[in-house]
Length: 252
Ligand code: GTP
Image 1: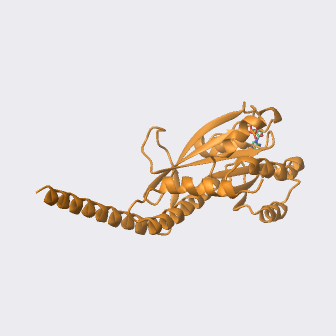
Image 2 (image 1 turned 90 degrees about the vertical axis):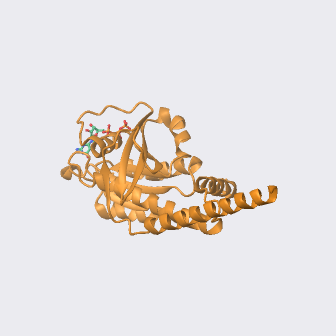
Image 3 (image 1 turned 30 degrees about the vertical axis):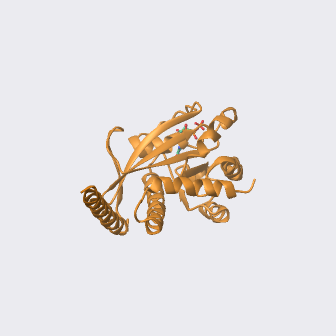
């Protein structure tokens, strides 16, 4: 009698596991559709979403980091320079096909006194956006400095975007598009864009491209993991283990 009960329970568990696997396979099939439709949407921060990614935006003081984020989220531009105190936190929702992605953005201050505080946030970020201003050569030369700062704490998998901001200041430009593009290639940035937080040029594009990149990476890991361990597709655990392994292998 006891054996029969155990067999029935085991059969039920097997059926549940098969259903989970079918659901997971179905999800992957849907997920693998071309992610060509994406838009920034308005949602309350407490609303439901599918995945969260963390991003950090860094660069010299006054290059326009806060204005870029402000323009993308609120479509507002502030002529005044109010230096960010340490860090500011923003939330953006982006819909890719039927998935809603929450992007947490840490907007940092370029001032030196906050550097050690900011570097603590590098390690949790999946994406770093480095900004220079096209009318400021020093901010362009400091790309190298910001990359070195990032390397001290960030994950080796971090995605990188380079922005040349303030392109509306046509007469003040000292760095042309080609120079920006070349340095982005040289350092292995995933994307390079020139932007204007004042006119809004390319501003939404930054975040849409970034989230598509992160989502595609996420799907790759998800597929890899469910192929390795189809009975227990716990992606978060897998990603965490993978991250730790990479950290251990990282050379000092
Ligand atoms: P910190 O927080 O001090 O590191 O500065 P930030 O990089 O966040 O710069 P912020 O966004 O505060 O902008 C600095 C100044 O540049 C402000 O006066 C903005 O109005 C101006 N600014 C930012 N983006 C643009 C742009 O695309 N075009 C023009 N013309 N001005 C811009």
